[in-house]
Structure formats: C-alpha cells, structure tokens
Length: 322
Image (cartoon, rainbow, N blue to C red; front, top):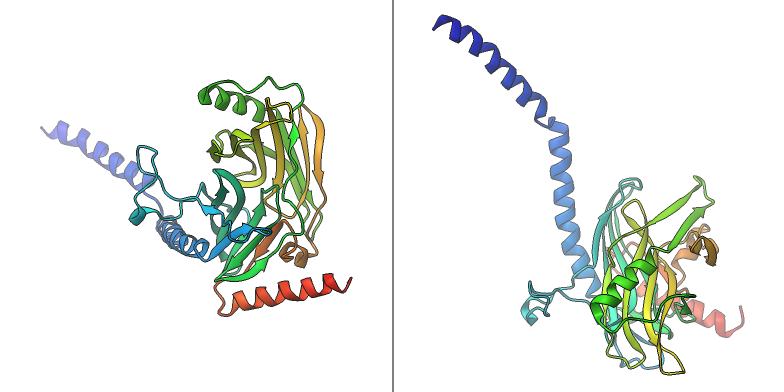
C-alpha cells in the first residue's frame, strides 16, 4: 500500500503540472474574452449600419437593390421576422489592428451589384466604417438615412470573355464545378507605396462568397469569388455565364477592388487586368464619385449630413469644370 501511494503521488503531481501548463494564461483568457465581446458587438453594429444604406440605379432610382438576408436551414429565404441582413463573410485582420469586419451584398434580379464591408475598429483607433464597391454594369446611387452620399461616375466593372473556356454546362451543379475550376486559373498581387510599403500575392478563397442564378434573361449563372490577403478579401472576382449576341451563353469575368492599393491580375500567368493605386493620398479613398469608396467615422452624429455636403460640393465642382 505504501509503495502504491509513493508511485501515485508523482503521477498526480505530473497530471496537475500538465493541466497547469495547458491552461491559458490569465492574459490570454482576458484577450480571448475581449475578442469574443468585440465580435458580438461588431455583428450587431454591422447589421444595424447596413440597414441605414440604400443603393439603387442612378437612372432608375425607384429600382432599389436588395440587401442579402438570412436563409433558413433548408436554404429557403427566412421568415420576415428573421430576415436580418446576413453577411456573406465575417473576418478579422490582426495584422492591421483589432478589427472585426462583415461583408454584405446587394442584388438586382439575383445578381450582385454592390458589395460592402462594415469594419468595427478597436485599435489603433476606435471607429466604424463602411467600404462600398460597385459590381454593377450601370451607374449607381447610394443613400444613408435617406440622403445621397455616393454617386459613382461610371459602371463598377467591365465584363470580358474568358478565353478558351468551355461553354457553360447544362446543369447548375456542373456550372458550379466549372466556375470553381475557372477561378483557380486566376491570380493577383497587390502593392502600395506609403509610409510603410506593402504588397504581395493574393490567395484565392476556395469557396465562392456568393453564388447566384439570376432571373435576368442575359445572366444564366454566376459566382462572386475573392482574392485575399490573409483572411481579408482584397479583390473581387466575378465569373458569370452570360448570353452573347448569338444567343449562346459564354463564361465572362470581371474584377473590382476592395481596397485602394495597386492591383495586377492574371489568367494562366498572363496579365489581363490592372488598377493603379488610389490612396495615399488618403482622401482619394473617400471620394464619393469613385466606384470604390470608404465611408468612415459613421458613429459620429451628423455624419450623413457631412457626407451629403461632400458629395454636393464635388458635384458642383464637376459642373463648373473643376
């Protein structure tokens, strides 16, 4: 009996030691709890913020885009009481700071026309911002609290044929496989010259952020993909099966930015698209005439009025030829 106790005691001490080593340090526990609280708070503030925005066709302002809403477990639209805005992606960007972001999409006839990220920053400074990108072939208008704050001067994208791609398949399941294979043939990199230069290759996020089958006659199928820096989607890639003048469907693609950096995109290692650096200077990224625009400091009272006045000033300058 004595011998058994003598053997068991070190085992008990060792087990306690292992448990002590496995237990997170108090600082780690506090950090995890803080991050979880920030995530929960950010989800609520993002859902509330996107409902203050309305996007529409500039030429047909009654044609409002539809904010993507939650779906039930069977994939059908949720009941009206549960139809809260549903982000197509939630992500963090720890290399930038303590920030929680949610990506939302607005559609017309099932096709995505606007994608916007709502980012809740906790450091290096505290603020809430929304970055909007036009994915439309038409000019759009954006409103917050019923007032115009965004009027892109042109269409957000230009669709081009995917050279050498096989015709779209007959079934939706086969077309999804085709889109996935085509998306893997695209690649991109980015760079920005600033106080701290940055850049590198972007990675394709393997699953589409949003799959859609449009009700429009000229759009058969499509998917929105993203090329990311870490977990942050930096560049949008649209792949669509669209009807040509001959009446046949054809795979087409388009890129649109989620940032103000310089982009270079490739298909089978051949460069096919590029975009110059927008910012710095940083005010360029907040120009409401751009198809990619950042609306920052949205928690400030009177912010909508400030954004409205900024747009009006720019539009007056445009009319005067400034």
